[in-house]
Length: 278
Ligand SMILES: [Zn+2]
Image (cartoon, rainbow, N blue to C red; front, side, top):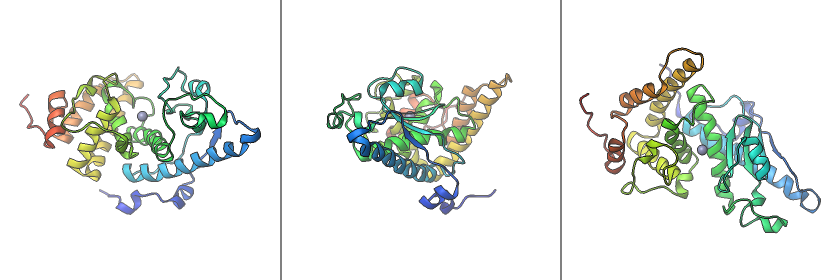
């Protein structure tokens, strides 16, 4: 089997261009007038973040993208229009089938006043967090690429893995995660769990520690391609059970049955629980 060398996993700034990736960022409602400079600045800033995100996500996932959806910056109403749903104030970035949407960096709690506007999120803007936010959203694209479908990455039973991977790949794990000792595995029930993102990051962090980053991603690729294949079959009216494929493959690849008790054990002790006889 051909193995990619470590070097080829890393996409440098030059190769973003060589790969023919066009980074297209637009702002949906430029302020113009005295703020015209800042309109151009947020577009340029976001473009830089997207290029950085492609570099770091390509390194994490070991694949390169062939195309990039458009990136838009907008206010809350525009955000909701692209997202096709009302969003909570804490939602500041999203990957949708209409492309990426980010809340205008000038509408954060600590920036809005400078532009004579009312904040539309309680988040504080910082360059570092914005870069990690962009890398998180772009990361969803890689996860979908590994699945071979854009449609099912947010299915309840695997959403923790998707969000956890993006938290870790983007470095957002440094903005917060739940300690190994305090971890509980209610994220397996779905995203309504408290600290869903932080706990998901904790699990993926632990997996990367235990298996090593490269091996973890190898296992992830197998897990996601099999699960994605089952979803695609189902979408084509063929008989398939993506949920079962995911759980069976997880057991095969990671050596333990995916349930709350085992996952808590794994995170707390860094050892795979002994397989139980079926
Ligand atoms: Zn996400």
